[in-house]
Image 1 (cartoon, one colour):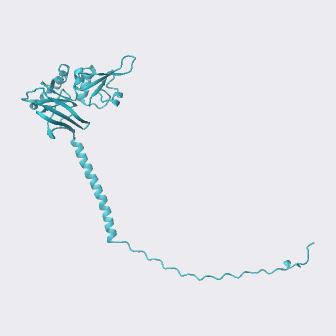
Image 2 (image 1 turned 120 degrees about the vertical axis):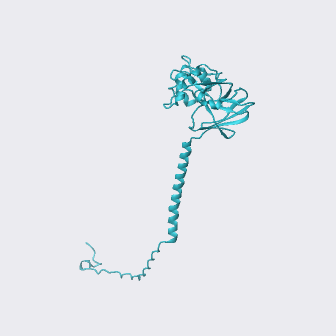
Image 3 (image 1 turned 60 degrees about the horizontal axis):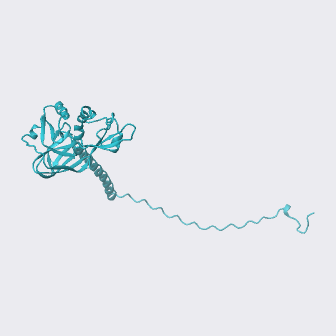
Length: 276
């Protein structure tokens, strides 16, 4: 349903074409998250299959010499989420990221000691199932079913704490932690549950509220101006302009008598006298 691909080439993390068509492990972005950049420099650029598996890399794109690119399926891809049966405690960030070289991502999860209180007294067992049921860049839903409490690893980048991604189980807010240096982990109670991650940054909600209040104030201001103008028009209607008095009709004039022209001396000729 939702997976990633990785194009195997020297400049995979400076090459943007693959990202145009697929959700990729590589690609170019000048503003990478620090933890993901650490994974690139210390593991992905070295071809660490354990890290590629935990990032749900389902396909590799390879280009044999002199041939067109082809896809190869990765049988080790772990999917969108999975349960583990062992938690490995790391005492520092350096130990945590170095441990990604020698662990089994399908059954083990690396947890920094800062989250000791979260996993304290947790008897981890791996049984049951969990799967992604709905994907959106700002909202992910999973369905879990297990006979006992589980520890789930989600193949999504950790973004926190308190930077916008909130977790819910059956609609109720719940806590989640960082695991495997850059991914998300969560204790999931026994039974059938819906797990949801929502991107709800406080800054966005605050900006939306301010924008809504500003828009409302603008609309009310315009309505107030229009209402005041209408009220003033009704209360003080403009004075009517005096109608112009009708002009008296003029009497028709008598047509002038035709003027007859009297013949002059030069015009007096004998009509009987013929021209020579």
